[in-house]
Image (cartoon, rainbow, N blue to C red):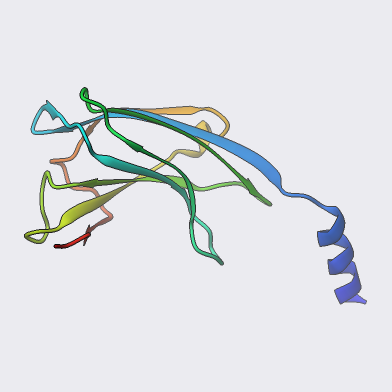
Length: 129
């Protein structure tokens, strides 16, 4: 009986579509950084995190990404920035993670200036040569 109720619920209910937009300017030692890869992702507890969008910073270090995702309870977006401003391991890019605040879901989060020379709590070396 429980299985039948679950099947009925999931068969008729639909997930809500949430939108999220992020923008900012990437700097390293007070200089705007061009050509920096930025990924906009959404955390999933059970499956692989969803990629909502990517961008590369322009000549002024600016990026802007819009994304959307359908989930049952809400979304938990975050931003990855890949850079060599402060290398953790020689010959590797550093991946810095920045959280996206819940108040900005279905709106725009302006990160303003993102100083890559300041360490974040969640960093790792990736894309080593």
